[in-house]
Image (cartoon, rainbow, N blue to C red; front, side, top):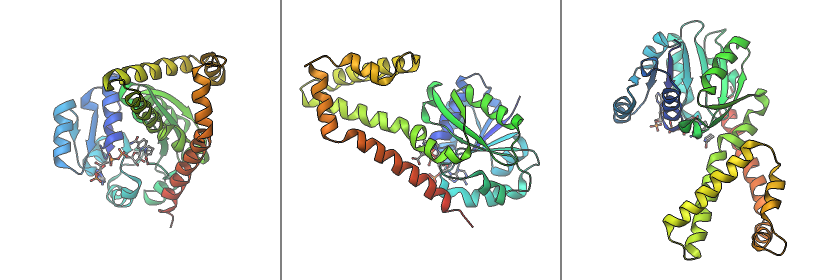
Length: 269
Ligand SMILES: NC(=O)C1=CN([C@@H]2O[C@H](COP(=O)(O)OP(=O)(O)OC[C@H]3O[C@@H](n4cnc5c(N)ncnc54)[C@H](OP(=O)(O)O)[C@@H]3O)[C@@H](O)[C@H]2O)C=CC1
Ligand SMILES: O=C(O)[C@@H]1CCC=N1
């Protein structure tokens, strides 16, 4: 069985490890490195994964998943480069970091696959986009696709689209959580108790997402079916348009894309 080590088991690293465990991987095949000892201890106690050093991960794992913040990449690559075994597959989850950065810093020929996942991995509903670097073969991409398909859906994209993908689906869950939070507050404004407002909005979100995921109707058709002539929904839609919510989303996602590009540029030679 392929052994996988996550380097930097923070939020997304834990989401991947726990998703892989739920998807049927043995804890014995999953390990991680982590800066904080107390966090490492709690991950081992909660899930049974082994905490290892970078050298230990490089010696034992077939796939190294890099999940540190993009700002922390340089010291990690400096530590990893001398201990990396030829043929070990590097999978980067880091926003903005191009495969070329890893190829420059790691031994010649190291295969690198760039991935942008998202946190719904913890419930097996991730959307992950993968792109191979110049040493990654179709076989490497297949390994990564198989790995990620146990925790959600996977799309192969050209690396030139990864910054946009990061802004759309990498950050995407946060936009939905933000909307849900605001809609629950609207319930409070209207005098509905928080628990009930949460139930009403979360189940509406689950129902709407399920209809969208079925893919039989375009979002516009689904929205129109809710919007009765001279009814309540059109009044709300008028306010959303008046407050520029559509334009705000376009600008927000463009800004997230720009930040992803900027995170990559910070590591150019
Ligand atoms: N969160 C998300 O939804 C998503 C995140 N990503 C990407 O995943 C990466 C991680 O993000 P996220 O999980 O949110 O961040 P976190 O800060 O939660 O996780 C990173 C963890 O790695 C630790 N760390 C830093 N350097 C090292 C090192 N050299 N060795 C071992 N551990 C180290 C950090 O410690 P410390 O905090 O002390 O620095 C932290 O605990 C980022 O590059 C991000 O772009 C991608 C998709 C979605
Ligand atoms: O906010 C971030 O930078 C990371 C990348 C995508 C989601 N979270």
